[in-house]
Structure formats: C-alpha cells, structure tokens
Length: 113
Image (cartoon, rainbow, N blue to C red):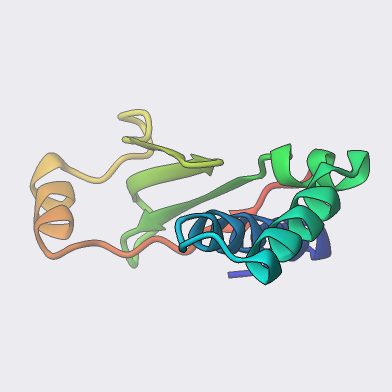
C-alpha cells in the first residue's frame, strides 16, 4: 500500500498522541508531566492539527481473470464501504459469493485528490 508523506506524518502524530495518553495514566512524576506538556505543545501546533485531521480515501476492486467485477472497496479515514459493481460488469452471484467466502483480498491505492 502506498502512503504519502502527509499520511506517514499523520500516523506518527496519532502514535505520539497515544504515547501522551499512555504517559498520562502513569503515577504523577515531574518528568512525566514535563514530557506530556511537551507532547501536547507539539500536537497543538496548527499545521500538525491539520495533518492529523486530514482523511485520505483509498479504493480498489477485485476482478475475475476475465475482468468481471467481484467487489469494490473504498476506505476513507476509518470508514470502509464494500459494494458490488453494476450487473453489466459484475461477475455472477455464485462467483462473488465464492470469492467472499474465501476472504477475497483487495489492493487499495490512494485516490488522486
């Protein structure tokens, strides 16, 4: 899966927020408090807020060897949408169900924005 630099940065900032929350659950200690304040100041900067809030859409589809559609998947942020293609380009229901029972994999690529 391909990730942009902004996506990598956003993932790192989300991880840093988890670290802050983890440290906040520890017993009070001056060093922990200071580190939590530094992390909060870092995360509070406006450009970092924008990067953390940005949501990207990744999408892809699965097809039979003959090019008939099995399933189409789109993921935006943490929301995944799974849908079938129109009947004109979709594989027969029997093939679709067989593929889904076998846990059909779908490669997702970042949509151009």
